[in-house]
Each structure stands twice: as structure tokens, then as C-alpha cells.
Length: 386
Image 1 (cartoon, rainbow, N blue to C red):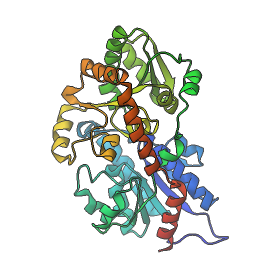
Image 2: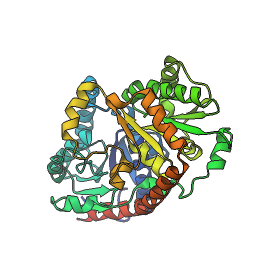
Image 3: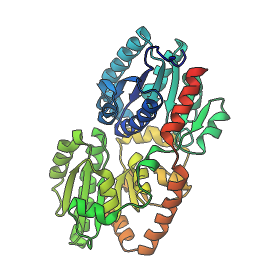
């Protein structure tokens, strides 16, 4: 299939994004596609940001937003059922191109099937084969005509394994300001300028909220007892706000906490330090130039299965990209309220250390800042013309 010619039917693009971060990435990609092909039709699985760009959601990404082996098993039948229905629908009426946005466990098998049937396939966000599951590169070679990479070292790695790829920069680096407006963000959120502020980001998946929200509130209670002037902001994606409220109440709550619907970038701009679950939000915190404490817990069996496959000593994206522990990581058994509170307090008590890490994050921001939407559209146009 090739790019529709002038006067022909519009370009038809199927996309699958499986979580809020994928929804954001796909929305930025859709903006670039629409600039190149104004009449583009996009459909598949996605979220509200994609819908704002004209996307037709056949299913919501909420159906796929599950992490961890054990957690996935609980929803396996429903997820496989959705993938089977989507595959049959796309095979019956093939799009010009299928773009899987992250979610490799869901997307790569689907991409392989569609590609074998003659559909062009693009995967947006290289799976973290440099961190774990290196064997997945074989599946990438089978499944994808092209991979859009958000980190600069990835295309060369994929090329060594025969996978065509392009570095398109990280879309968040273009969205987030080089110099966050701390005072403006605090004013917008009703926070005082002279109080320490900690952003709590326990994640957006059900399993993350279950594992992390109560833990972060317990750490916040300890910090509040030690520093009564401290304030907290906890942003939540809208569809999880009720679940977050329940988790906070279940943990006993904490004085000085503001629960926010969305507004995560404002929360990061306003804070001094972030206490944050491992994931894309850690990169958002780095791009906001904020020191952080990274934490994570999963079901113990999921952790035992995942740990031997991990190829690097870090799990947080800022540490991976900097190649060292520039911010602390407290995982699994080490993720205790006392330890988390102490790590946050260490940042607040070390302004010179905070300044040093902010300089590292400024350099990282420049490295990741590219015109992602245009570069991605360029790569997709070449795939369509091949």
C-alpha cells in the first residue's frame, strides 16, 4: 500500500496506544500526520488526547493499562479478546499503515500478523531491549517495517540487528518548557512561594495506584510530622481520580495535600522534589528539572520473574539516560515509608545537590528536543512509499 494520491480517498491509519503516556505520544504523532495529510482518518485503541486530534476510538486504552505478569494474567482473556477482534477488523478492512504506540506485549504480535498480510507497520517507541528482554529485537525485525525511536542511541542498536529505525526525539521535550515557571505554577495551584512542595506521582494504572498511592501517603505523613510547613500535590488522570481519592483516604490522608485532576506538568513545575513511581513520569520530572525519588512495587511473583531479565542497574529513565544513579531508586522491599521520606528530605536539605542534578537535566532536555511530529511523519511517508 502507498500514500493515497491527490483526489483519492484519505490516508487511513490504525493506531493502538495502551496507557496515558501512549495516548500523549500518539496525539502528538497524529498532529504531525494531520499537518502532512489533512484528511487523515485514524482509528483503533486510544484515549482522550488522541480523540482531541480526531481519533476514532474503537476501544479505550484503559482496557490495556495493566502492568506486571500477575496483573496481566488477571485480565488476559479480555485483552486477548480485544486484540483478536481488532486483528480481524483490520484484516477485513486494511488500513494504509498500522502504528503501534508502545505497549509491545499487545502490539508486536498484532503488527507481525498485519505485516504478513501486506499492511505497512510502524512501532513508535523502541521497546527497552537495552534494559531487558534483548531477545525481543527478533520480534521487532519480524513485526515492523520501521521503528520510531525516542532516545538517540536506539537506531544504531536496532540497525545492528537489521531493524530500520529513525530517531525522532522525545515528544515531551518539545512540550515541556526549557525553564519551568515555578512561581506561576504555584500561583495557579494556590501554593505558597516560601513553603517546600513535594509532588506525589504514584502512577496511573490500577495496579500502580493499589501498590504505590498508600505508600506515598504514608511517606508524606512522616514528612509532614517532621516539617509542618510542607505541602503536597498529587495529580491524577481524570478517570483515576476517584480511585486515587479512595487510596488516599484508605491510607489516612495527609495535611497539606492538594489532589489535582490532570495538571501533572504544573505539579512538577511547582514542586521542589517529586516522589514518583517508575515510568514515563520520571522523564517528565527530569524535563521539569526537578530532583526526584523513584520508587516501585509490583506483585512479588512479577518481580521475581522480571528481575533476572533486567540488563542494567537502573530502572528510572533519568538514571538510564544519564548512565548513573543521579537520583535514588527505592524498589520493592526498599520501598518503605521511612526510607522514602528520608530520601525526599535529603534533597530538601541539599540545595547544592539539587542545583547539580538540575544542570544534568537541562543537558538531557536539549539532547531529547527534536521536531518529533515532523520527523515521525517523514519516516511514515517513506514507509508508505516503499
